[in-house]
Length: 308
Image 1 (tube, one colour):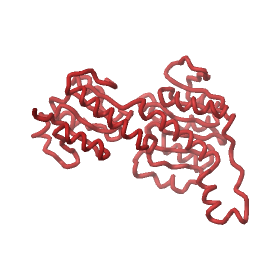
Image 2: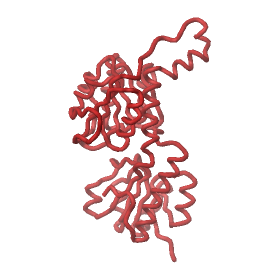
Image 3: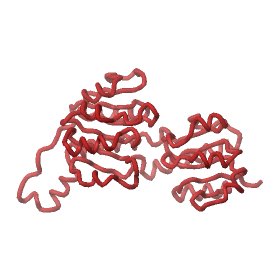
């Protein structure tokens, strides 16, 4: 039986690539295939949340029926076009939730206790001359979670173990044992630690902005493990440089992997290379779920994790 043709937008780990190559005729966009020639053969596209699929690529594939995303983010997909074309989209939720929540907690602790700087203080010999400066307590503090989906709820579960006062903002109140504060500015005013876990949508674009940062204040910390588009980077840099907020820990950036050099000079910013889901176990599970969605489509079975 001939293999179906799929278009691959970005690279995948070897264990996924080997399986894809065995199951399909895989055309790699980065190898500049002639979309005019192969576009009509493509029924499915495999990509990740950051790369998405460009509109011109979708338009070049008239028989496209599925976009399978390796990751949870789908903001880089033209959903209006997909709906018009009846193209289904899947992602890989749940399997990466715990890792993202773990990193959020690690970033919060590292930022508040300045763990990287303390490591340098011990290694450099500075400890022999002076004690490391006092830092900020985490347990018992007020946490605000902006976005209360799967990851937000897993973050909250972990924060509860620290005895934190937990509040959240979401599109609507949920049956959870936390305080619901619908207004993001009010949530920022409440929080010592404001943790952003919201999906990137037109409604959340730059939801962290001048007003939100002003409300967070000089004793407040920002942690972002969601999407860069949720934060106005210029406003954040201005706030960090002027000590308008106490600090920020970021796993995502507007032009990643290039980072605005203003961040590199800041001692009150903790920078991470967009790796919240980057553990061996989770990345294997993400790849498997992406491939299972592809298999389900070509077998004429219901998709496992459809977004639309």
